[in-house]
Length: 325
Image 1 (cartoon, rainbow, N blue to C red):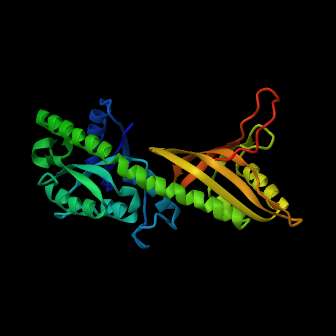
Image 2 (cartoon, rainbow, N blue to C red):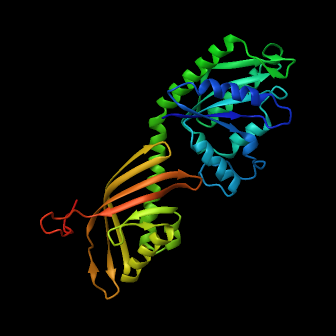
Image 3 (cartoon, rainbow, N blue to C red):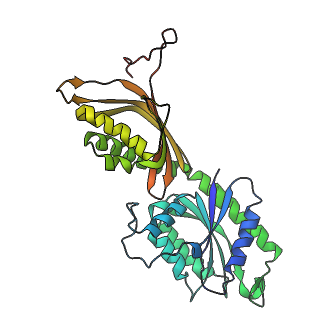
């Protein structure tokens, strides 16, 4: 299901934006065409921008990695923003500037409030969204303090604002869905890079490189007993055993197909470990059926489950290891 983040873009004491964001979330939660989650920037304190924008998707600071994972988890956004001095609040601009790839090919709508309804903040946010490759929808909700807030502090929107919000949500959900194929293509490219990292790690006998590809709680159904290998240490122990047999290791993967849905992806194909043994004998290895289940985390796409298997002869109960793709 499409997942939309409702981002509250003010953190200052005495803000009224929390009332607005709750109103948006309560109305959105009635819908059945998407899931909505409230994201308060108070819960994601970031430093002032200290490193280049995240064009590579690699972040040195743990706080930035955590924020990147939050942004990456959504298909679209509703940005709830005040207007400070005719402009965007600094905390929201800072949060948008810290990551880049995670915003790309998603949709955004705007609910603004302030002396002039926050309209000038939205005009500038549209420019920022263009630079981040975010598709900003035309409908917006504009909430002047003088008409939509009692004593300029208690939020009491008019009935017409509910209709405006529904229209905004219609557009954000529709555009988020329409852009899904573009997001899937980018995710697939990132996953294939992870697969390449596995191949490089095996060829270099680099267990630490392999460690970065797997989730700490990975569950592996490998060709060797037992029935399952649970946790990263068990998985790496299997690869370490392979390295003790081979002087030189190679790994080949054919016919890999990847399907991405949100934060999960599944890949399947045919894999083969081969190489030169310690005694100098060249071992061609055997082809196995390989399945990978990836999940998107703050450290990027990692393998949470994999399986390697061979078909077996029903009559003899023996595995058939001489098949080729």
